[in-house]
Image (tube, rainbow, N blue to C red; front, side, top):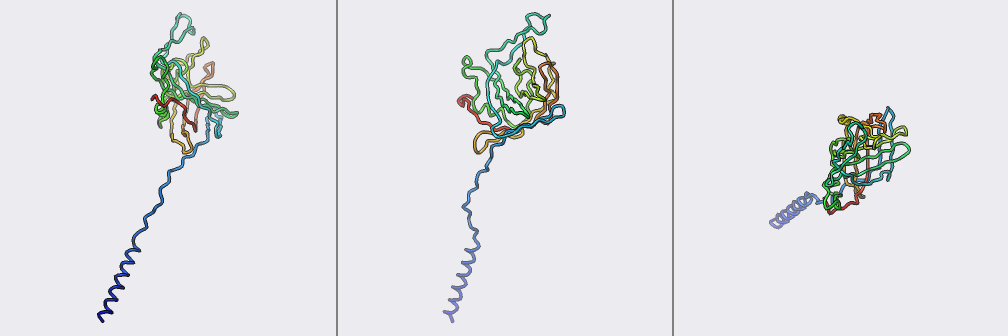
Length: 243
């Protein structure tokens, strides 16, 4: 009888041990995969005079960059001749711009991202580095620069568009004696907001923005651009040693 009781005890202990082992959860060895971020299709849409213009497609966006003298001042040699003036720039500063262009038969736009920088070593190293350029695209709201390609005193955004086969700009550009001087403050009700900026898994960066603007033709005739929406994919090929 003692031997039989011993056998029962061993069998019960074995059963309890087996159940305990079976209750242990399996530890997953599957690693979390990083989220894939696809490159967006370049696209733009905007409305002028009740007509909406749209364009889209991979590789439609062309990117360029450069700089112009910043903080330029108007000089009138003769105050009686309103449009005979020159622009004098400061040698120590430059307006850097990245220009993104979408050009098609249905809609065309230039978007300039603008920021002033101090020119160093006689202008040899004014170009911002990668970190500096990426800050141009921080999510948030931006002003439209009213004096781009003229006095170049304002950071922000500038826009050119085509509507009904006619060109319009969001800024009061210098055009010699033919310049139409628009009183400052004409973009106070306009908006440009970067709502998303991410790095694509396959390379480059995705930007998404919405905007409105007052735009003018060469004679100063104004239009309202509304319902602006922009998506871009672009990379960078700049001097990464300067920031």
